[in-house]
Amino acid sequence: MSKIEKLPLPNYTEGIIRPAAVDETVALPSSVSLSVNFNFDRIGAIETRPGTTLLGNTIVASTPVLGMHNYINNAETTHRLLAKVGTVVYDFDGSSWTSRRTGLTASSKARFTSLVDYTFMVNGSNGQPCMTYNGNAFGTTNVASLPAGDFIENFRSRIWVANSLTDKLYYSDVVTTSNTITGGGSFLQISPQDGDSITGIKRTSNALLVFKRNHIYRVYSINSTDPDPYINVGTYSQESIIECKDGIFFHSPYAFYQYASKPVDISKKIVDAVLAIPRASWPNVCSWEDGDHLYWSVGDVTLDGISLTDMVYRYTLSKQLWAFSSYPYQIRSASKYDNGTIRTNAVGGDNGKVYTFDSGTSDDGTPIFYNVETQFYYISNAKSDLKSIDEMVALFENAQGAQVSYKIDDDSPNTWRPIGQLGEDLSQLLSVGAKDFTRIKFKLDGNIIGNSLIFRGFEILQSAIINK
Image (cartoon, rainbow, N blue to C red):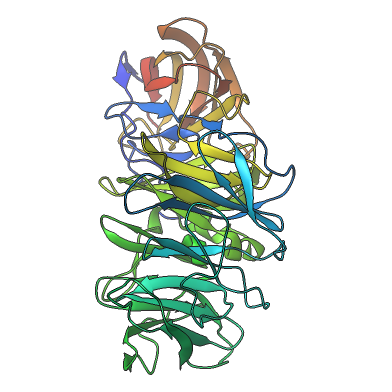
């Protein structure tokens, strides 16, 4: 038998690496197997995420926000946030929501793009016309002959509208010198009705990308387009496509991808969490970014037999790591929000409310629960050794009330053995009493409202190794 008097466990710097991706015997001990509502931005510690703050008042209770857009005129004198809720599009002027367009199909998603000092909007291929907005009511200025459609984008000084039912991609004439839009009745046919309908369009520096469920086509101009798919993966959700400093990313049924010369899978570390997204949720995945992080709202998932609700997967570009968060509502749409003073992200819930994201210390008054599970530790170099742990120390700030527990060897996913509750500040000695195990993992969980919890990890003080 040998004694280890002091053994610091690694800091959690690698985010979530799921056991389905990397076996526990070789998983980085500086990663965690599961975490909810912790971020990994602080080097050497993890920290509970910020909250969300209600913007204005409830728009329409219990009704999903199915489309958002930030309108700013070229003079930067008018700032409005648009949100489609039920059958109405509202705008927010910094203090209240006002109805601006009515009579829409409630279940359709509103999509927007901005050009020539107007925001253009479509709401599905159901006969509701394309309309424009300039800070007041919606109208028909500069709509020209653009049809109703499901998706809209501007690319190379044209407005493009896609119809998912016919696979037609309509385009306007090039904007005139007087900033007038004309045309809109001409179209390109994108592999028509091949069983794989258009699900989104997104401009890049050299092509307009046309997404289908399983393919991507490139349109370079009205005279040059891919006759066959460029990439044989696609997306089910326009809202999952997000552009950031590193290019364009999107959700596909089996991975999150970066668009490049070929699709790059960025989600191998959390492969089972991606596969856990139900098929019914694929069309509703939505995304946003804050410069160094990409966020995808994916709905409810089940991991390790545990039901996790209203989940958001967060990817850090600079560190290439993942974190998970859960909210009291499902995020159904997102947009930049610039009110002339601050620039942040706004998200629309399934509850008829719009929130500023990563603001405040609660979710509109609801405490933020948290959970983190370490990887399994074998402690000694010989993984088959039997071990015991008598005491360890937890290092933290603002963790009062948090529960610490552990599991060993073949304990079931829902079996956690209690160690104790944290009640001091900065550090606390804990009596563990784990005996005769080969592997052990720890969990910290609780909820917080107020200052963020900063968790710096565990330090084993007394451990015995019994060589077989």
